[in-house]
Image 1: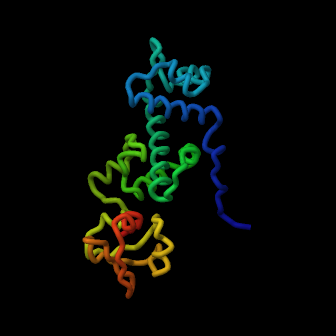
Image 2: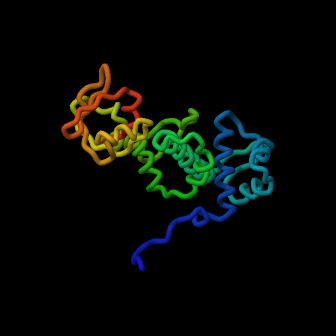
Image 3: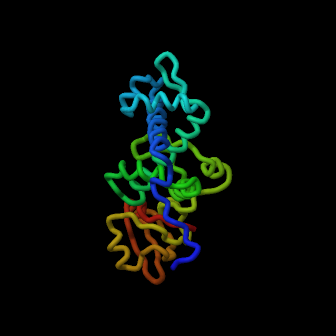
Amino acid sequence: MIENKKPCRTLKDSGTEKSLFEDEALETIWELAENGEVNLADLINEVRNEKGVLDMQKDGLIIIKEGKVYFTEEGRRRAKDITRRHLLAERLFADVLALNDYEEDACLFEHAISPEVEEAICTFLGHPPTCPHGRAIPRGKCCKLYAKEVKPLVRPLTDIEVGTNAKVVVITTPAMERLTSIGLMPGEIVKLLQKKPSYVISVEETTIAIDEEIAKGIYVKK
């Protein structure tokens, strides 16, 4: 028996069916609002649940007036949070895991992570301003702190200075198998020796030359 082990958090644990619908509807309103005012008819057409939308007004999440939909303060907060988690998930799946078909997983992921995990992912990714499709990712507390005080904890090899020693955290490049065969793998300490005409790094006693595209897929931490 494993003692002091918390049960796994599931999607079911993250909210009731009603709250999950509210999150999806709020996220839809946020996206529609990026192009201007939100028409009630357009929202209902997107979410396919007129009663659910009307109930959101009763619950204080939105205001419906003259065929338009507006956020309440609480509705805007929730919409911002769920949109931020979804778009960060897209960035994680596309940039780090190199997935092409990730939309459904991002929808599940957004409901299952805590605020602490959300901020850790954002910091790991370097506080990206946009998702892979160019939509603006709402800023979080960690982004405001980053703008004032700190740099991302994990960055592509291309972002560090020549002469810097750094630990490899993640490799997301098609050349990963070749790199690991010569000793470059997560956990290893590398030193960036040059950037032009190609990137040259040293790993223990081995010197490796790689092109910029491969270097972009090697994430390191100083």
